[in-house]
Structure formats: structure tokens, C-alpha cells
Length: 319
Ligand code: NDP
Ligand code: OXD
Image 1 (cartoon, rainbow, N blue to C red):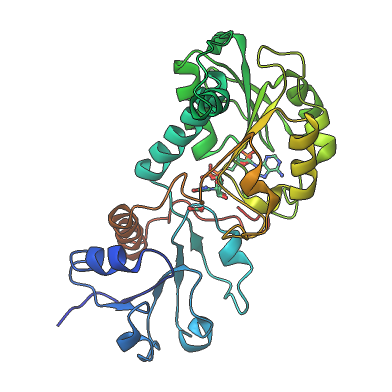
Image 2: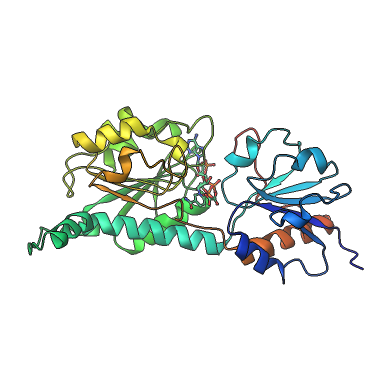
């Protein structure tokens, strides 16, 4: 009989990976996997921990004795808006596997725009052999909005590729080797950015921040011939009607998008067929389930030893 307190796992992603990962995760701890129909109606009273991502509607009504909540992802907007959310510590997912994946995606997208991949892709399909004028990374400034765990790692790796990198965050707190701009210095930051990378959490302050006015403030006379917008934060931060118009009118030269106002992106969205957009299905940095379970177990160990939990979300700030 296990002496460790059980955990509820209520994750609406990769059910096969979750089931497989749970075979070895949380040693000595009973796991109630609510993605398994056979476990959905289990008694949840007396259980202290829940790991969740888009949980079933009845979770909080049935699990009345929770002490700590764990987000299945780095972003917590989906947790903070859950009906009936209890006032408990919420720990988000921070792990090098996720950070590394995001930086790979961001660096890849910046390089695709630098190396004019969209134009060469179109030329390949039309069987056109035509080398284009090629600027270097050092000719461009990448502005990263959101310089937290993900933004600061991506900035470091972009610098290693030779890009000039500047950062924008609420506090403007220093990040090694990056010229930082605080929230009230947005216009100056935008005016220097050839490529804008969004790695912001979705909060009331960041909802709709990527709009026509913001796009019009980006640097326009850089080596790419127009500004590029890259977003892997949250789709709720972009005003898609403005963004589509900007991509059609040339206010934005091109974009890479991993996140959308509505996901999955509806089949009817004009974004699918914009020739100057690279699109991925919210897969820039998937949570690795084994790393996620190990991170949760580590935090439970800390909690049970009486140590402070790490990566706890500041409820009022919303991230
Ligand atoms: P962090 O909490 O570590 O960093 C958030 C950053 O955003 C901080 O620099 C913070 O500023 C800044 N920020 C927050 N609000 C504002 C604001 N109003 N004005 C200016 N700056 C602000 O988050 P992570 O880096 O771990 O993750 C960022 C987001 O990436 C997640 O919230 C999630 O939405 C998204 N994500 C997307 C994934 C994908 O696959 N597409 C995967 C994982 C995450 P300060 O430093 O001053 O606090
Ligand atoms: C996350 C995500 O927040 O995958 O981790 O978007």
C-alpha cells in the first residue's frame, strides 16, 4: 500500500503518451488518470494534488481537498479562467525540454525569414532558379516581447546566430547581453525591431496587444524590406483581423504563427492561405510528458518537505 498522497492527472493532450508516461511516473504514488474513462468517476475526496490542462468540468466540484494545482503547460491563462478555480498555489511547467523546443522554433522561424524561405519555396514550386540578395543576421534586429524563461533563452540563442537582439518586458529587468526595454518604452523598442517575436503570456494587459497600431510602429526600412511578426505566446494577444490586413497590405512583410485567437484554427480562416505566412499548429514547444511528471513529483517532494514551491503563478499578474 502506497503511503504517498495520490495525484489526479486531468490532461487533455496526447492521451497515449500520458498513459505510457504514467506507467513509470510518480513512483509509490497512486495516480487517477481522468483521461481514462474507467477512472473518470473515481472518488476524488481527500486528494491533495491535481495536474491539469483543460480538465473535465467536474474536477473542482469533486476534488474538494486539493492543496496544490499544477499546470500541464507553461502558460496558465487556461487555468486561471476555469470556473470554480480554488484559491490554491498554482505551479506552472518550467523545464529545459520545453524551453529548448521553443528556442529551436523561434531561431528556425527567424532564420527562415532571414534566408527568404517563403520566396525560395514559391520559386521551387514554379521551377524558378533565381538567387536573391541575402542580408546577414547581423543586419537585423530581433525584438523579443516577453523576456521570461522562454524569451530570454530564445534571445540568447538568436544572439549566438548573430542577430542583434533587444527585449521588452513588464519590468525591463536586465537579461545578460540584451538591451532591455520596460513596458513604458514600447514605441522605442518597436521602432528598432525588424523581426518581432511574441513570447508573452495571455493576461488582461496583453490581450490584443499585437494590433494594427503596434504593427505600424515596427521598423520599416531594414534589410528585409519590411517587418516580420512571429508569435508563439498566445493567440489572444493578436488581433487577427488587423494582422491579416497588415499581411495583405504590406504593413507586415511576413509572419510565423504558432498560436491563434481560436484553436484549432478554423478551416474558414484567411490565415491558412496567406502566401507570406508560415503556420504551425500550437506545436512550437509541446510539453514532454515524462519531463512534466518529473517536474511535478519534484515540486510535491519540496512541498512535503516544507520547502517553498517553485514557479508559482502570481494570480493578480496572471502569469
Ligand atoms: P514567463 O512568465 O517566464 O515570462 C513572461 C514574460 O512576459 C516576462 O518577461 C514578463 O515580464 C512579460 N510580461 C508579462 N506581462 C507583460 C506585460 N503586460 N507587459 C510587458 N511584459 C509582460 O513565461 P514563459 O517565458 O515561460 O512563457 C511565456 C508564454 O509562452 C506562456 O505564458 C505561454 O502563453 C506561451 N507558451 C507557448 C507555447 C507554445 O507551444 N506555443 C509553449 C509554452 C508556452 P517580467 O519579466 O517583467 O515579469
Ligand atoms: C504551454 C503551451 O503553455 O503549450 O505550455 O502553450
